[in-house]
Each structure stands twice: as structure tokens, then as C-alpha cells.
Length: 126
Ligand code: HEC
Image (cartoon, rainbow, N blue to C red; front, side, top):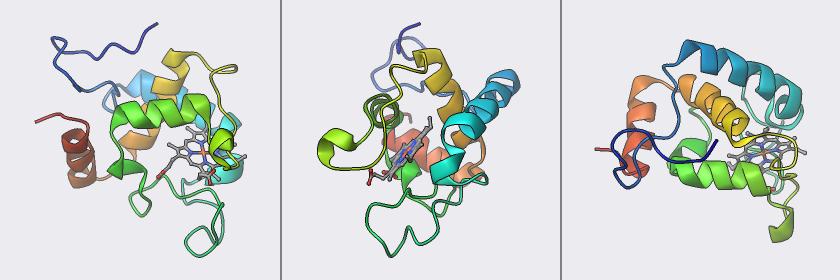
């Protein structure tokens, strides 16, 4: 499965599908198994992440995950941050592109409507 956006091939069109209930349920399981240990079971981030550099930030609306375009979130999850001196492992060896889309769709599904809409805009979606 590739990373081609849905919707007519418009540049930067939406890749994540936070309204797809089955995909979101799959993403929730993937999150619990692969991400929750660092980013927190409720997406709240690692304790002290706001004040201590190098801690895993929240993925809920209080964090800055939603500031980043969807494509960038996919790249960070695939590559991790270790080559930039961070602590996050890359998941391209363990998770397929489809599974990474599922887990990020789950994260996006937890954002309130206005935050989702803001993320759509930074992702190049009108
Ligand atoms: C070993 C701990 C760890 C695990 C496991 C982990 N992360 Fe991370 N993640 C981090 C840290 C720490 C950062 C902040 C960058 C840094 O300092 O490395 C981060 C940053 C991110 C970011 C960028 C957020 C932003 O606002 O800039 C995304 C997206 C992300 N992680 C997604 C995931 C996903 C999805 C998973 C599970 C598939 C996951 N992470 C698993 C530690 C982890």
C-alpha cells in the first residue's frame, strides 16, 4: 500500500481517515502495542514532556502533533528521530504504511473538530 492521498490526487490531500471506524479501531490497537509506552495510553505524553527535552510529547490536542502536515507525521513515524539525536525508533521495519496510516488516523480521530480542521489546513486541505 502506498501513501497516495485519496481524493483526486490533489497535492497534499488528506491521507488519514479519522472517520473510518474500522481503521481507527485497528489504529487504536497498534497505538496501544507500539506507542502508548512512551506517548501515554491516553495520548497524554510522557510525564514532564513540556518541561524536559527529549520526552515523548502528547498526541492529544494539548500537544503539537496536529501542527504538522499528515505527510510529515507519516515520515516521523516511519523514520523515528534517532538520526536527529532523538529517542524515537522508526517503525518502517515493524509496521506497514497501512498500519502507520491506521495509527495516525486513530490519533487524529481523538482531536476535537476544530483541531482536526486546523490539521487539514496545514496538510494542504481547504
Ligand atoms: C521509545 C519511545 C517512543 C515510542 C515507542 C514512540 N515514540 Fe513517538 N516520539 C518519541 C519522542 C521522545 C518524540 C519527540 C522527538 C524526540 O525527542 O525524539 C516523539 C515524537 C513523535 C512524533 C512527532 C510529534 C510532534 O509533535 O513533533 C510523532 C508523530 C510520533 N512520535 C509518533 C509516534 C507513533 C505513531 C508511535 C507508535 C507507532 C510512536 N511515536 C512511538 C518517543 C517515542
